[in-house]
Length: 429
Image 1 (tube, rainbow, N blue to C red):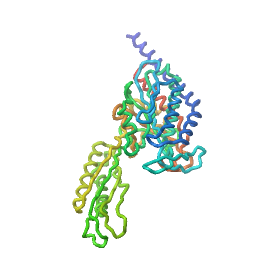
Image 2 (cartoon, rainbow, N blue to C red; image 1 turned 60 degrees about the vertical axis):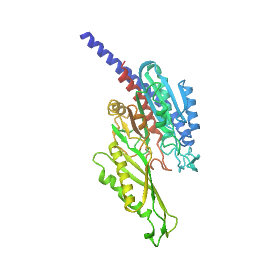
Image 3 (spheres, rainbow, N blue to C red; image 1 turned 90 degrees about the vertical axis):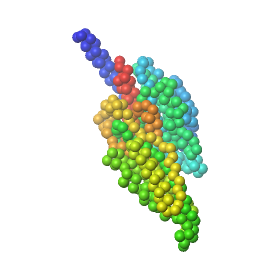
Image 4 (cartoon, helix red, strand yellow; image 1 turned 120 degrees about the horizontal axis):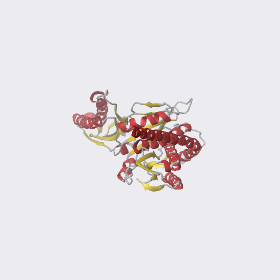
């Protein structure tokens, strides 16, 4: 019995020593590759491409992954790139994901690598910018691929690097993003056991990681309401049915969904009307009005209740005014849900790489299609700080969005260490 216990202790000491040695190697290699990661980021920032149109981006990524000697697949979900690293020892399969698309935003700053790219969005020529940091996500994951490939003999399992297009949403009439990648089998062959993803953040200081178990980002659905009335002269509204008045009442009534129907001590929810269009002249009551909006929820039951209440309000408000109305709730993204068990296992890794600066955050009502991966397998999604010192954050998706590139190294270290620590936890020595 004593001999058996001694062997166990020796084994545990060996595992701990090996893990610490690998962490030191990761830190050293992250330091060595930081300048290259910044160069990659600047290349992608200067050459952004819109969702499902990331042809040059994908080719650049694939060329580098091929140079590393990885098994590379392209044209997944249109422009996605996937590479597989088989470690030198048996173990689980881990997915690492980076989104690669830019936004229809015209950049407004004087950076030497500022984007002047343009593209077509909904039939219009627009400026294109990495206004949400996806350029940093690509560069971080390329750095992780380099580090883990250099260490492949010590890797206990397989790593699947997933460079995903169209996180910001596929163009109208097209499929794309994580949902299409899942449909095309990106989590299979080999079957992925868990998946990790990150997002850079312009309001969080460099060196800080934020995360939370369970729902971290909201589900999202857009909706359209078509209100049909009867046109009349503006001086004689009794001769028509006013869709503008009907729409105004709908907007007021819609605001009661969250304030009166949601259990807000449980989770947050949002219903916003973002578009209202109707009428062409001051003295004509129009025949129709169109409205568009967004629905956000951090609880699936609350999400379904919002759908139900919205349908009831639209239908009954229209009927009370003698109008007709059609509501269409469009497909969206599920809740970005961090598996509690996986988060608990990996939280010490985030704490260690951030030197104790890993903070449990409040959930936010932004949305992420990383949630489609998490619907299939356990996943962990977290944020890495990159706030520019002495500068008020402009916010993501804005022309003045800017990041401190020093924040990327923590992303490289975090993703690399999550792989090694998870593999050690699952595979043992």
